[in-house]
Each structure stands twice: as C-alpha cells, then as structure tokens.
Image (cartoon, rainbow, N blue to C red):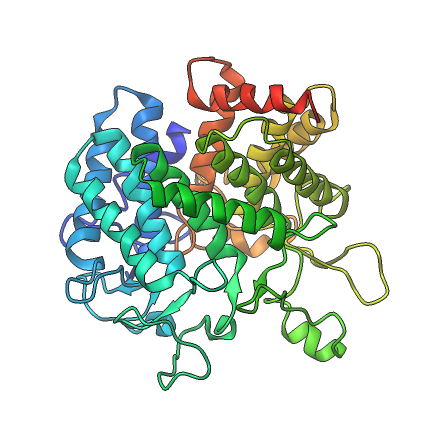
Length: 434
C-alpha cells in the first residue's frame, strides 16, 4: 500500500497552483494538459485522509490532503452560486475539456462531500466541516427531487437542473445520460452521506441516507441481483432490451450489467446501513449478497480470473451474456474488497475466500505494473496496450485501489479495534440469522 502511494505522492501535488495534477504518463511523467476535475481532486483528498489514519504517524499524508482542500475551497467551489464546478483549469479557471465548462453534477458534488467529511474526521478542522455542510445543503436545495425522491444529476451553473426540454443545451461528453437519474450518482451520494453522517449527525443527512439506501436496494437492484443503470424521473428503468440490435448496442452505456458497480454497491449499502445503526438488517445483507453472487456467477473469467466489465440479458435469455470482456482496474480492486469482506461475513461459504485468492492472483498477474509501479488501467490479458497507457487521468487515481487495499490489509491483520473489523463482525452476526 505504502509503495503505491509513494509513486503518486508528492508527485501529483501542484505546488504552484494548488490541488493535484491529473494526467500522468505510463512512466510517471506529468503530461502537458492538466485539467482539474472535482471527482479526482476530491478522491485524492479522501485517499490521503484515510491513508493518514491508516499509517497513524505519517503527517505528510494529512498535510497533502489539506493542500487539496484549499483548491476545492478557493477554485472548485462557486463563490457566486454555490456548488462545486465539475471541472476547472490547472489555475482554477474556465476550461472546455469534456464540454462541462461551468456545469455542475450531483455526482461531482457528492465526491466533494465525501472527501471533506473524511478530512474533517482526521483533522477536526471546523472550516472543513462547514464546507461539507454547505455543500450538502446545496445538493439538497438544487438536486433533490421532492416528488419522486433521489437526485437530479445535470445542473447549470446557477444550480438549476436541466434536461432535453430545457432552453440550455449542453455540449458535455456525458450528454447521452441527460434527462435520466443514474445509479452511479445515487450510489456515490449514498457513499458521501455515509461518510458525512459519521461526523455530523444532522437529522436530514440521516433521512436522506436511509432514503437512498432503500431506493437503491429496493428499486435500482433488479430481482436477478444486478443494478439497473439509468431511470426516468419516476424510477422506471431505462431499457433497450426489446429494441433493435442496432439501437440496443448503441445504448449499452445506458442499459447493461456492470459487475463492478454491483459488488461495489453491495459494500456501500452495508456501510450505509451500519452507519445508520439499523438493527438486524437482514434485508440489506441479503440483497448485497445476491449482487456479489450474481457477479461471481456471470461476470467472472473462469480461464484466468478477474471480473469482466459488462454483461447483458439478451431478449429471450434468462442468463447474462458477456458483452464487454475487458477488465477495468477499479472493478478488480472493488472485487478484492467485496470478496474478502464476504468471506469473513459468511465463513462457512468457502467460495468467497477461494475467489478472493484467485482475484488477488489475477491482479498480481495482469493488473499490477511490477516494473513501473501502481496498477494498469485494465487487465493486460485483454488490453495489452495498457502497458504504456497513462497511470493517471481524471477518472483514474488512488481511490478504488486505496480503499480496497487498506480495507483488505486491515481485515487480514484482524485487529478488532479497527473500524472495518467491527463492521465485519456486525454483519457476521447478522448473517447468522439469514
């Protein structure tokens, strides 16, 4: 873990303009273009805050996390309208990369809250908590759907949601998702509010956290055990299953099985329930287990290991076919986390421990860059070009790998005083009554 972090930090610290560098080549050189997106900026703060706690006596990680806070506060937060911009230039100004310009996203603001809550937990700095509170209230005021619940994803600079019927027209690269509510923003709002609730027992945070948990668990997860990805405002799933083959393939980004999101969400739901102190929450545990089991049944590569990126229930089929056979790095990291966790919750079901060992073997063989350090963006058994692919970009940093490895190390060490092991024991006792 420390070996990975030392490849990234302090390399990504932008001492001149603040925040963190985004684009790094395969051989750890800074690329010429250095945009700064709220998601990756926040993820660095979260990882550094947690690493500071994980290593205990290493203040350098806390200092580097505080460094990122200043950029979020001074440049990514909109001082006129509130809310965090989705993207800024290296210097903190307007930028047209990905077409976001001055737009905002619920997803990006969720990650800011997530990071700020973790930083406050480490530093107890009231300025950090105050910004987290302000961001939560901004999300509530501008993103929350009081009629159907959940949150709108697309917002103009002034915080007004927009869709295809709006006068405002976006040029952003995620415009194909416009007008829909997504599981990805939902699960990361869940994640953010869980982190926030640990440090701020505000009743509305509790209410929204439980709402999101129930919405994801009972509406977004299908009966088969996978997350449906996008929804209309009334939570009717977006589906192209009965469309033509051409239309279905053109919209796989909106309608498919994403195995990595399934078991990541299984973990996040258990975290949320535990933070809410829900007693004997067998329902959440049963759904989470079904999600991981579904991914193991349909998304696992039996030949060399690892989880595939995408599947689909084709018309007339009652099984999930693989439609995207690549293996993204983040999904492999989340797989390690989920498999080890469930091996401890259900010790009598030995398949979880077996798959965890096989997953770790796959990661060592095809994901970890043993020569250059850190992880390739995808499994080189499927995408060998990632040997020379970037080590970092706006969607790839240290968050998935950092969380997975810190959790796995702590669980394997078995220190009962550590929070993750108390969490495991809580769910192991709940599992006895399933």
